[in-house]
Image (cartoon, rainbow, N blue to C red; front, side):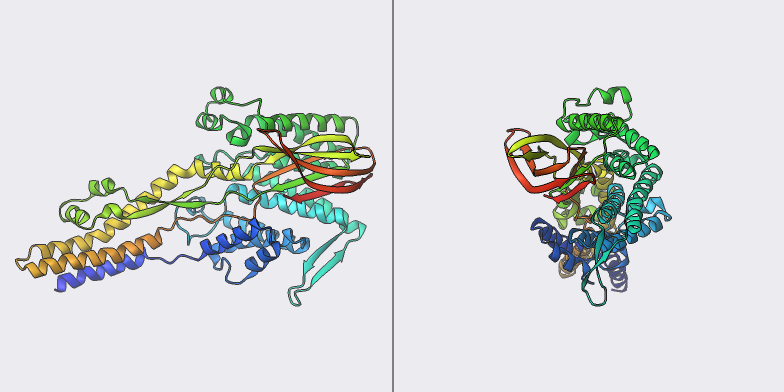
Length: 503
């Protein structure tokens, strides 16, 4: 009896260790996803500001990202900048910690620190630059008084407006520096270059307007063409052969044979950049710019798999083997992260009409296929994630079964049939309790920045001054069927008419 008690004491410790608690981030994020689906941004803000939303030090970065997004979507740009600045500070602080720890944070440990994926941390800089430019363009920004909760407006002087424009440029420069300095290893080889930083960065440098910045803008458009053809071929949106391209990533000659030069989005980028370079060569400044944030990022989900019994049997022997059979371990499960591919199959065009006649019609180019990037990010690391989760779950089950097996062996060697039956019943009960703990501790980490759009499209152009009807048209790549998704009367003059649309 003493021996039996000792082993069940050991078992209780194992069950306790295996039953580490998880936060309620799945409930929080599912609720947030639904609010974004309904474009109910006020509800989003209310949810993310709730003290129970993603609470805990392990979620501090994720919460700041969602708060910044909520403020931005509700037009509280000053508050949004403050939140995203906090996100940058957290990212910088986390980067001083062990890279190895950061890498392992996404491998099935939902109560680990959320470090964010590389593309998520990168996009913080885009939003900071975009919002700073928005404030410059509008000449004021709104923020919420933390004490009274009232929405206040800050009107800017000319110098303050210029300061915000220079901040938008500084964000681009920091972004570029961060991209070039970030940690790259075999686990993160796909998101290596960013197309959006080139296209948006070129636009921002052009707004500064001096000779040096215009020259930088030209080079950024040249870089963008190269990235669209030779680097974003890792994404389905830019390359129907993307998986073959990825599988031959280290073979420069072979991977180039899988580039799809007839891809509509690639052609749009190349032609757009050529037009921009010609426009800058002629000294024409952009006076129309459109950014479209389209849809919702594909969400991570989970798929439930059975524990690989054979891998356990390979490590098991004797009584453990018998116990596995007795407890029908093949019904034990574990989770893996999964994500559906969400590649756009449509394009956007902007159309300027005057007197009911089409004056200009041009594509709005796909600048960042965020859902595609997110999907390939998981695809790239999936086998590593799967291997580590299986190893972890297997180790936990073996740790659980060892003391149970010993106890079961003691009872099975008894000549008393009642003791044998009681031993088996006790082992089954202990197994079930431990299995519950392992299941709870094995909830895979599917945290992500859910406020991101699925895609970002953008365009800038120089058009003749005048009053127009602006139409944004969505066209199916397959059927060429079109629908007007945005319409507005605009007066385009010397300064840039800027449209930041969420469709």
